[in-house]
Image (tube, rainbow, N blue to C red; front, side, top):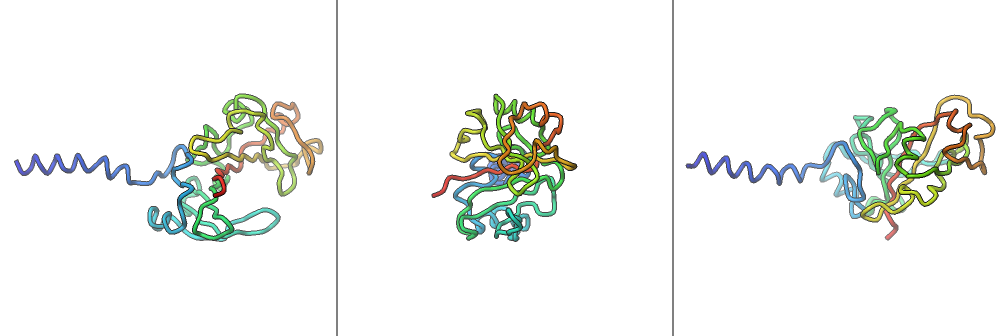
Length: 202
């Protein structure tokens, strides 16, 4: 009888334990694996040695204070930013092409995805900024597609494309905007190199 009770208690406890285990891959939402209510302290409590404070790369050669989840696994790496670089309030998270691929996805988009794959997830063509400068390759307008709307839970999505090699002049530079179904852009064939989930300012 005592053995039966022990087994029953273990089975009851198992789901609760599983629910409390933070995810290590899969779809990213507005609340998991990082939420707007998180801080550096809560993330370090939840992820332990898999959460490390670091200076992270920003635009124009600048850096900012952030936290990296899974710093030793490039295909799991998540960079977490904070409001005003203070570690009390999360502002969002970023996936980069540190491993040319990622075990995470956001709204059906992952690192290494093609223009066609992102266009399918968006439901229509979108607009990309010219390449070859600090803000190059970002999607500037999802044209009221699915990826341009707030995600369930109230966060938003930013996607950036890139590719090694020489950029055609017609696709290069500040002020250039190119549709995702443009023939020259399709031939250049950039892929997703950065995905950010942005939390609404409090």
